[in-house]
Length: 476
Ligand code: BGP
Image (cartoon, rainbow, N blue to C red; front, top):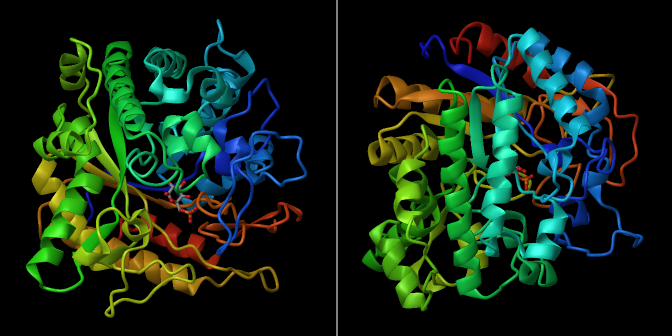
């Protein structure tokens, strides 16, 4: 299987799902630290008061903060060429608006990135993966306040300057469309109104929401401009959630609804990041919604000057969409309807590798910039028996998705930079806060109540993936 010789074979992590040590090393609380655990049936809750008896899984994570040396050594043994991970903004600026960065936080990531390099692993760093300092929510109403743009840019500049030479691959905001257009608005935008509603379907004032999203676009663009200025070697990408929708039937209404949904959910944010301007369909829809954005005279030029170098995305599943279910139902947008041709994961996510090939083609034809798959994997219940996790189902999942990427590269001519499967290490699920929903190549002994030795055990998938990397995809 001939993948490009410099293909970034890797795996991914996110700070608030793995680090723990939520109040150590000078770190301030982040929005993620205010989320309780949930379950398959019980959504996570947002809690303002951290003294309650609730359990907050991000407070301990899987203790990557204290165990990163062991973990990165294991990643090196697997042969990962790339590790996608995020910096916790509140480790660097505990409140978001502090006069000076927190040296202990900066030093932590110095050690992490240096160790990656020593293990021949290219770090790919997300600046904001579903988190921001919680103080920015309470004191500013998150990104609804234009001043937060500059606070983010200062944080980004601090990272670009400090890690110059160590890190050259960056992403600005994780799944910005998922964190803002539908679920988890608090996470993406830090809005107080969303905090007071609920984590997933908190509805707020639409003008406030899209104004905040506009500020996130500007924050990303200004970070891209700063990153290029600080080090011309920097390559900076966006990160978009790209679940695929098919029309439930060939009825033209279903086809139209699917196209509209794809434009709004999948293309809107990507178009702004890659093309540097709002697409016409988004302008029309915002006008129809009665949303008038407060635009500064320089905003247009900033978006255009801050276009990303590459487009990264997550892809897990596809679903079907019917016109009558309506574009307005957020639950429908997320879950979609069942496709009779596809199997599902234990969490009901439909497994569709051909959909990844379709997605790669759609995105490459639309944007003509290098693509990078930064999340794709199987959340499953894994069992450690006699020291072994035989996760053949995960190997099957990864194999068929790797084949889809291969076909997109070789047969369709897509320019794909790499693949960082989700995840390097078992960690806390973002959606449910569970530990039981495992994605990792490496098993972590920890349960849903936070108990366990935290011992690490590479799974069967780790050995398999190690061969895939060593053969540049040929053994997949
Ligand atoms: C994406 C997030 C990740 C990760 C993944 C799997 O939306 O970027 O942080 O969690 O989905 O989702 P979950 O953890 O809900 O299974």
